[in-house]
Length: 429
Image (cartoon, rainbow, N blue to C red; front, side, top):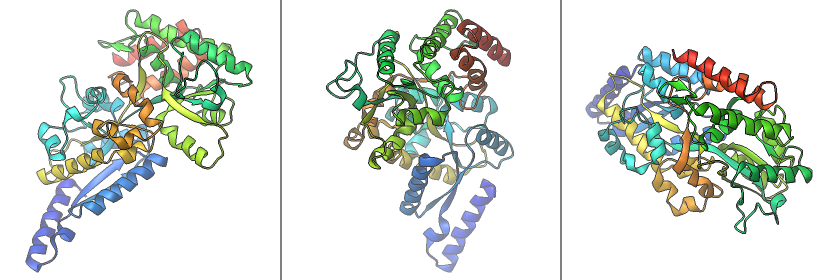
């Protein structure tokens, strides 16, 4: 059913309620078509939020649909919006925003919209608002979280070492050399793969590479040019750091995502670089008493010139639809405002709420390790703003075919960086 038709049905239902003297809310509820790509624990939490919203708002009913994550979701959005059959609201990765801007699939979020939602742009972390805006500063989506990689670590293993502070947090990791020293020590203690992450390619390798590049102040794209100027050398350095760790047996050979998590859980790794979304996994294992050690998570240590961590955001976006009524849009913004103000429940999935009042609350301060690594939100490094970047993008593919092989010794770091530069540059022309 198109949005225009849904609005017509809603108005007719309201008129019928008046004529027949029936209860208005049951007839006049504004129906909101919702699409997301959230599975697993994220999906469970979002469905619970939708259910709670619907229970509190008899005048608005969210009808949720979960679609396949990644490229299939964004392809569905593009084709549906093109024929006027898109949803009223959808979740959206901010790393995909540049492509959405090129395709014209999103409706700008105005100051009036934010007022309807009872929120303002100043309520959000600056990095997330920048990622949610176009080149002119026009807000195109409303950030819901900041999700980044963090450093999980085995507190039990590090007890009594120079790398665990009295407060239980990682310390004395101020350089690549410091990190290598810790990993070398762990290798000597019998940890077969001291630092685990998804090393076979894909998202895991990209996130580590991009963090190391960003900590040098490096940029993948500068004024439309790939690895311009000294960014090339910074990319080579980032790849070299990972390749050196692999050559010394300090990171796993070709570890899949699931295998990298298992290495940490199985006490084969003392450190684990992965997304905040794995916090529930380790919490559940602790509660079930199946982990066998005390763990925690901190922001990725600053090993190079500046603090920086790869990050992305789930956001709420409104598909471009000139037929959307003012009533429908107001209902959508009501949904967005309510979700932001209830984002503490979303933080349970490990994500850092983009809505600062939640992060500043006493309830969030009690949520650990989330509250400890929330500091990364101040210098989150989002994917390059380009149609070739973001979730399920050509840049991720280049990691699979070039960076990961270089980490494992099949290409030199210089060869990988040059081939990546050439391949991605051809896509921008």
